[in-house]
Image: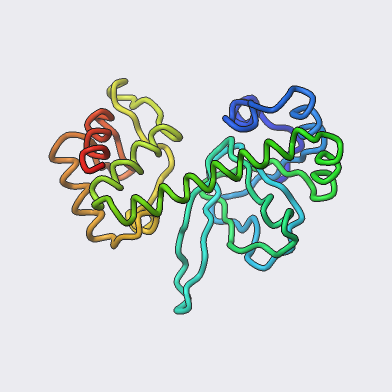
Length: 239
């Protein structure tokens, strides 16, 4: 499904990414000049644990599901990489192999920079070293925040925070009511539970409680956020 050209929506997702948009025009130009596009169908493998790091990657459309496999053979989802986010650089820097599997979640487009080109850009643009440090520092902050939330917040608050994040990244206005937002990234309750470190049953209970409070609506095609402010109040109530 390779296509050498990003469409307008995909290019906008890359260019508007918080980190990428902070780079100088010349650096962005050199990155995009040597980048190539790959397209995947839902569930297709993008990179496997143990693979050598051959590419630096950005998500341009859809989502990349990062997962691992437990000793019992169960696949566990750790995170979803959203459009505009770059990843895969850690293994290039430390020279070790990929630590997790990456799958397309929905129809997914990624932008790739070959390892050799990535290193050439580093040699040409000293700016990229500092930019990568900022990127890694942001990831560490996010990781610490997730660990803190897991240890200090009840599931209800963590679920509300996750829904606020999802509607920020994947929210589209509902056709029936423009004030409501549909989360276009379709997640099964089991997948949502894995992100929160909880059981599907408990997540289901909390979702139904939020639905009774008219903060969300559960539909066969996904979740509708009816009152984002209500979700934020839930997320902040136990902070």
